[in-house]
Image 1 (tube, helix red, strand yellow):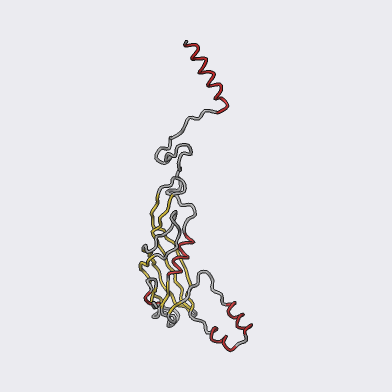
Image 2: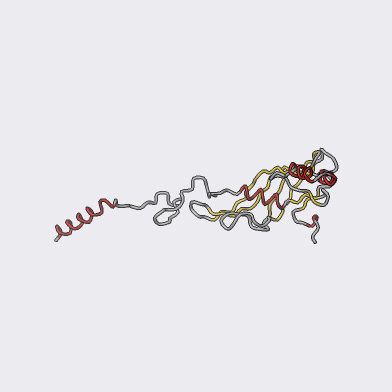
Length: 202
């Protein structure tokens, strides 16, 4: 069975977890976890995700404040051009120390124990420390952060003109592109006019 410290997302934090007020900088690449996006937009599994920030120790845990930058592949929703760019997002996450409440609950009644557990439900930006608080594993944090940050409608540029609805031409490359469209109401008159002109020539 793999140890916590062998995880590619593990960061050793034992040296800052001993007392409040200490800080450990983080400036490293981690492999992107699987499941971030899809074929239309996402981050390829194993791609380098850069984390730059610090773990800061407080009384009841560690706070990670960092900038997460990942290479995102996408497709412009207007012109369908493939996009590849670095996508950055700021993140603040809490890694609490193991609570003694779990041990204290062993001598309590079941109803009281359930109440304690329910009152300590973790929020979405809270992640567990591993190996008795010696390591912070960033896998779930990276996945959650990047999935939430992916744009729903990525654009190659804000003023992308998209594609011609009639022929599919890229309107960014030919902004004057247009089609002469005859109003269907005048189509019969145009046909009659052409017939009369032909008769006059005869």
